[in-house]
Length: 145
Image (tube, rainbow, N blue to C red; front, side, top):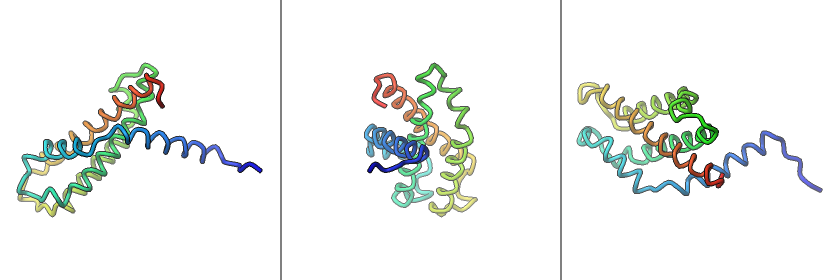
């Protein structure tokens, strides 16, 4: 007998399959280079080795979020309007990433500019969102989804 799978389970399986395919497009050395680039000005304020694992996790999440919304670009929507669709999720990622850096980086408020760190977090998350979006859109155009 065949197993009955609900539509919700089927969608979840399809989403996981797409995420696995998209993760093949991601490069760990590229993520580490972006971490160095974005947080170079904060060197000495917190240890890079402590926060690196979390940065990688947040980069992957942002990349997959962009890839998820790339389907709208395939259907003719611009990157900016697709980004507006997921503004809430991206903002949540940025806030969580900022909180992560503040807590795990053991940053004291007087040591560095909080605004600069928040802007660096925004740039880091948004750049990975854009990269996921462009790579996902390319996969849709090549019909590899």
